[in-house]
Length: 428
Length: 178
Image (cartoon, rainbow over all chains, first blue to last red; front, side):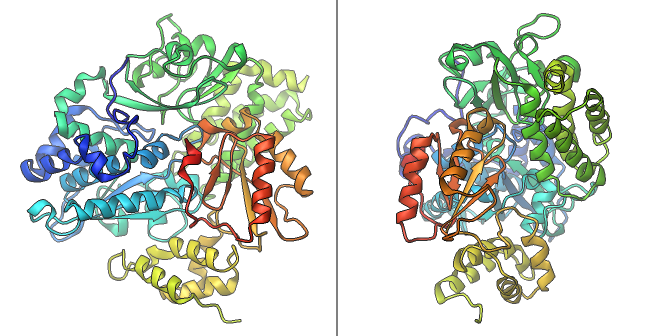
C-alpha cells in the first residue's frame, strides 16, 4: 500500500464541507504558512520537496516559482490550470468535485508564497457543474477568515475567482490559457517572455495545475524534506493516475512515485483490477493521449528487462524508441481486440479539432493525419500511407509555437513504430 | 426584437465584470457568452453577440472571433436539448460509437443535426474528462456516465417529457457521479 496525500481523506463523506475538511486537519497548512512562514521560506520548502508540475510537463514547481519577477508596484498573479483536457485524464475533476477545499487551501498557501493578492482558477467549460462547488468552498473559506482582507488577522489579502472556459484543449497550454482568461481566442503566445515575467495582463504570473497546487498543502504541513522522502530519485511525492479503457476498475488512484510497477498497477485489485473480460493486454498509453503508446512487453519491462515503474524516469527510460512519459498520468489501457490504427484515428481527429490554427504545420498537418488514418481504417489506405504519416508527423514535431504539435505527432510515430502490423492489416 | 438581459442576468453579468481590474473587463467575455447562450435559446446570434460587445464596451469583431473559436458556443440555433456525446479514445474503447449509432437511429438524425420537432440536437464532442466512467454524454451541466443503451433510452424519455431547456448553469445531481 503506497502512501496517500491527496486522496488520504477520500473515503470521508461530505469532505466538500469546510467543517468536515477542518476536522481532518484542513487549513492548518494555510494557517501555518500565513502566520509563521515567510513567502521565501515556502518557496524554499517547495524547492526542497522536488515537486514537479502535475499537468504533464513535469517542470520543477519550486524553480518555476523562483522565476517569478517582482517589480515594485506591479501585481502578481497565481492562475490555477483546471483546464484538464488531455484525453485519458480526469484526476483534477475528481479532486475538485470531492475535495474542493484542498485546492482552495493550496491556492491560499501558493498565492501567499508568490505575493499574489488575486488568483484565478481557470476551469474547462465542460466542467461547469464544478464551478458552484468551488465557489461554495471559496465562500466557506471567506466566512472562516481564510480569504478576503486581513486573512487570519494578518495584513495578507487574497481573492480567488473561478473563470470558466468554453471548450478548447489548447487552453491547457499556459499562455493560451492566459489569452483565454483575457477574453481572447486561445492562441498560445511566443515565448519569451515567459508568464513569470509577462503573464496575465502583462503582469508576472505563475500558472500551476490543480494537482500541483493541492500538493503544496502537504509540503507545508510536513516540510519539503519529508515530501521528498516519498518517491524515488527525481520523482518525489505522489501522483494521481486516471485509469481508463479496458480494465475492470477504471478510476483515479494515488500512487507513490517509483513504488508501484505498471504491471502491478494494471493487474492488482488495489488499482485497475486486471484487463476486462479476462482478455490479454495489448497496449497502454500511460500519460495521456500525447505520450507514446507502448505494447505490453515494453510497458511492463524496459528494453533491458527492468520492471517499468510509475515514475517520470522509469516510464521515460529508453527514450521514444522503447519508452514513454508519465505525462498527466492519463493511463489508457487497450485489450488484445483493439486495432491501434483505429485508436490512433480518434487521437488524430482530436488533435485536428483542437489545433488553434496559428501555425501551419499543426493546422494543416493534423488535418492530413486525420484524413489519412480515416482512409486507412475504412479500407481505402495504401501501403505508402504509413510512411506518409511518419513523414507528416516529423514535419510537425518541433515546428510549432506550442507543444500541441508534438502532442499530435508523438502518438502517430509511436503507433507506427510499435504497431505497424495493425496498419498493414487494414490496408491489406 | 431588442436583445437585452433581464434584471437577474444583468446583475450576474455585472458581478462577473467586477472580478477584473479596472480596464480589463474584456476578461468577462467568455463567462458572459455562456450567460447569453443560456438566456437566449441556447445559441449566439449576431444580435446577441453585439449586445455582449456593448456591455463590455468592445468591438463586435472581438466577440465574434472568440465565439467562433470555442466549441461550446453555438453560432446556429440548436434543439431544446443539446446532447453532446464524447467519442475520443477511452469512450471509443468502451462503446461510444454504438451509443452514437443508437442515438442516431432513435432520434432519426445524424450527429450534427437537429430533430424535425426541434427537441434534440445530437453532437459529437472531444474528450469530456470522464474517461473512467465511459461512455458518457453531457446535456447541459449534467454528465450522464457509464452509459448503456437502456440508460440512454430512459434519459431521452425524461428529457423529452421535461419542458425545460437544459443549460450549463443547471444544478447537477452529484449522487449520479458516485
